[in-house]
Amino acid sequence: MLKNILHSKWLALASRILLGAIFILAASLKLSDIKLNSVNVVYEYGILPVEPVDLAAIAGYVLPFAELFVGVTVILGLVTRLASLGGGLLGLSFVIGEGIVLLQGRDLNCGCFPGLMGTMVSQTIYLSIALILLSAIVFFSRNRNFFSISGIIEKRNSDPPKWYKVLS
Image 1 (tube, rainbow, N blue to C red):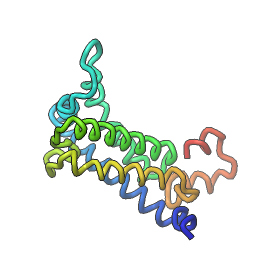
Image 2: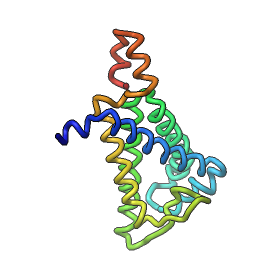
Image 3: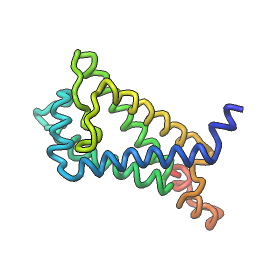
C-alpha cells in the first residue's frame, strides 16, 4: 500500500511542482540583487572559507542559478532524475549549514526568501528537510516523468539513448 502511494503518478507530479516552485521562488527573489540576497547571506553563515579562494562568494553567486535550474527542470520534467538529485543535494547542504549555525548557538535570518519574508534558520531547517524528502520522492518514483517533457520524449522515441534514460 505505501509502495503504491510512493510511486503514485499524482504524488510524483505534486512533489515536482512543489519542489520546483519553492526553488524558483527562492531563486527569483535572490536574482534581483545577488550580492545582497545571496553572497552576503552566505558570508553571514560564516561556514565556507574566504581564503585562499573565496568559496563563500562563489557559492553565493552560484546558488540562485542552481536553484533556478533545479526548479525549472524539475517542473518541466526535463532530466528529472538529475534535477531532483540536485534539489536533494541543495536541501542537504542547507540542512548542514543550518545545523552548523544552530550548533554554534546562533539563529540568523536564513536568506531563503529575501524581501518576501524573514525566516530564521531554526524554522527553515524543516523546509530544507522537506526539500530533501520531495527530491527523494521524485528521484525514486517510477512515475517521475508523468506529465513532463521527458515523458513526451519517451513516448515519441521508443528507444531513447542510454544517457537519457539515466538522467530522466
